[in-house]
Length: 112
Image 1: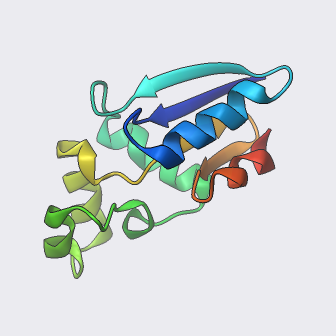
Image 2 (image 1 turned 45 degrees about the vertical axis):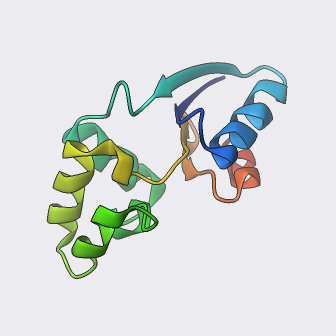
Image 3 (image 1 turned 180 degrees about the vertical axis):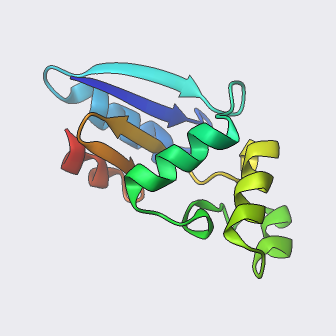
């Protein structure tokens, strides 16, 4: 099985999630450092759809710029995340079984 992790190596939750993936038997892990290679708006929308999340669910609220988006529409939040990927909460993991936000990291086991 292949798992793609939208990863930030500076994030402890992202590193913990990557360790779970790398320790799972039979998993081929593709690492995408999303700050260097951000998803397009279309790809981000598809990930959200597969995860059953709304754009606000994936907004990294700890970022200063996120405050201005608290009352924004989902489309505006999606646009902002696509334009500035630091606003994307991490890590996101995608497999054939679905997409999960690795918060907490153990959540990704549901799609392995």
